[in-house]
Image (cartoon, rainbow, N blue to C red; front, side):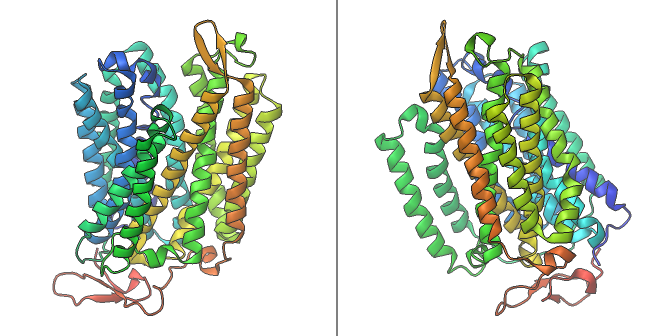
Length: 502
């Protein structure tokens, strides 16, 4: 049975969850300074936007890579490396206002997002089955909860201190997560070994950049511009060649045969839908809360006040994580995902009819976040109920990538809708009420798509019981290193109970 030698399960879970909260805050901590970025870094608005885009691209590329490296060389080691990169990136941004250096710092910060899927994977290796479901649910929920908490925290710091202090706070919190990880999280005994797939990394990186860059920049470049269309076309070609090469690799970066298994494929598709639906709250509700009353719909709150309203939803994701674990344990991740999607739909429908008071928006955002929290928490159980133990890091990293693609797509689609539907209020251009309602409908449709996809998931008894699945038929068992002087043990059933490596 997996063990946490010398440490209680609760301590390990708390340390990993704290680190997950820290890295997920990196995306929203800088939101309060986005309007002032061109002035702060002495650059045009187009150039300054790379401060945000660089983090998106690095997180998308590094998350599946860190998952695979974690499977091969140690998950805790990769968590330590990821947090160290985040601290280094934050420190760079503390001491400079030069755009190229700030972009480098933000790129390094984005490399830390893989901590969350790595944390989920190491929990599978170390925790007893009775604690595993709730622990994975909590760790997965930190992805949304940390982002919700980062917004008001960033607003307070930006309002009362120099903008560099934002990154000082990030570095300090990253350092705290690093110390907790080193001192409280044991080393996982499970390793896959093998050669690292550098060709796969190059292909995936090129494909993601060609796909995500026009999604991020399409609004300013023009959606029909040769550059935008050319990058999308290049992404299609690169991904096709990458997939062909990965299927022929002995130790691929992403095992495409595993990802095409029904449960894994459908969960990843649902992740895109959930990521889209969840990000709709971050794009619509804050604008309603902060817009002036003269707009006809705005509630006139400050950024900090709006952030507090949104943080309630983030807190709800944490509160519901044990509920998600219980529902998943009793009925399987399929039911939990469908219930989460249904709640998200209900939240957006509520917003369509109730959006004239602050508590209306806070209620709708909390309902959507509750649904997303249930879905986010169920996804690791669905993934790990279908992949061998040797691939948990890579599989969870790829699932996180799918959620990132969903949020990036939401940003592009809803951003385009809000840019096309505007009203003029003096010298300020704001989204119109109609544009906001269209965005709500699109987000609800994305949640409905997630529910439909989840309905086709199989009911796996192993997922309900927290069992560890066997590798796919026809594949040899993974060789795990034992202690010095011990023979290697075949992990044919994905069970670490037969060894005493730690």
